[in-house]
Amino acid sequence: MTQLDPAAHRSAVVEALGVLGSGPEERFDRITRMTQEAFGVPLTFLNLVHDGLVTAQSTQGWRQGGSAPAEQVFCSTTVLDDEPMVVPDATLDPRFANLAAVTEQGIRFYAGAPLSMLDGTRVGTLCIMDAQPRTLSAADLDLLRDLARWAERELGHSIEDDRVRRVVDGLVPEPVSVPGHDLHVLSLPSADAGDVADWRVARDGRLHLTVGAIPSAGSASALLAASVRAAVIARTDVPMEDAFPGLEAQVAADLSVADSVGSLFHLRLDPTTGQVEYGDAGHGLAALVRADGSTVALRSNDLPVGLQPATTPRTPGSLQLASGDRIVLCTDGVLAGTGDLDALVDLARTTADGAELVEHVRRTATHGTLLVLTRH
Image 1: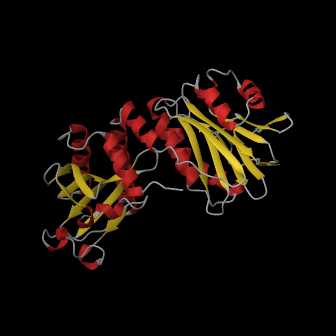
Image 2: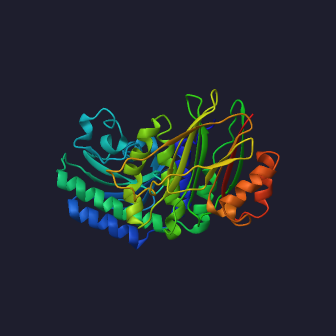
Image 3: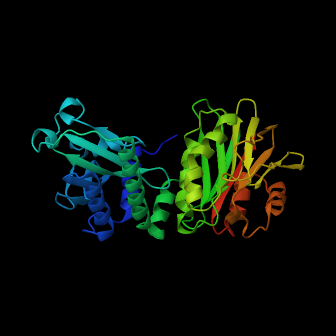
């Protein structure tokens, strides 16, 4: 299945920020000015990395708005990692010794912290430079991280709803094909709903399906949902019993800052055997419709992501999918015209296949995701 190129994804999110080419802005200049004063350096930059370029969105000691090819700039390396990068003396570092900034402009010291959006995409850096070699203490690094978090918040505020919608639309997965099974999908993304949705085939051939929601986070809901989805994708090859704890550790801080939680349902199907394992974190919108018309709600007593105590383990479930059996997963938006999950399950019993069910729901759904998985 086609994966989004990380560099192209980064460029799309930078474009969605809507600040490139907008000229000097005091809210960004204040950050670079205070960073310069805090570290006593001649140069500070708030840079954005996009389309093979690094653009100085704000700078102290250099020209505003200038761009340089990414391969000629320290920051194109900084955005490849979550942690700050410190180069005490660039002339001694083979990665950077031949950069024009070093050979022509005399830069020796560089330190930069990556700037990440709520979906985890690193879009740029907040960095400092000096013509003299330097080192940073642990306290200095903490200060640089704190200033970078400030820059992230200012960049995040720049995203308007329609730009968020373009980013969210671009993250809709590609169709997948699963031997012996049909997967029918209704996907109606919304920048306001904060729905989590993903479907993909892992390297081991298993199908992964995910639905969820980030409620009550205002304009940040969609980006928080994208962050949760990214955390799910990052654990495609992680065993089910380890995936949820790792995911919660990754996204808990973002959810806490937004004073929100996340519901999530995730399943994995082995198409050769029909064996399914799943986990439900407070979502509750999943059901198995057997070929004989009987149904089983696929839910647990586990709390949403962000509420489950770290000392309380998750309780994954399992089932065997037989010929003619159908699994229905959804988010709230697709229930607008059908009622509740029970009504959707009744529709699943009476429709001929997943395609007919999807088309029926499409006529009344306002937003959200419906996944219908059927075994031949």
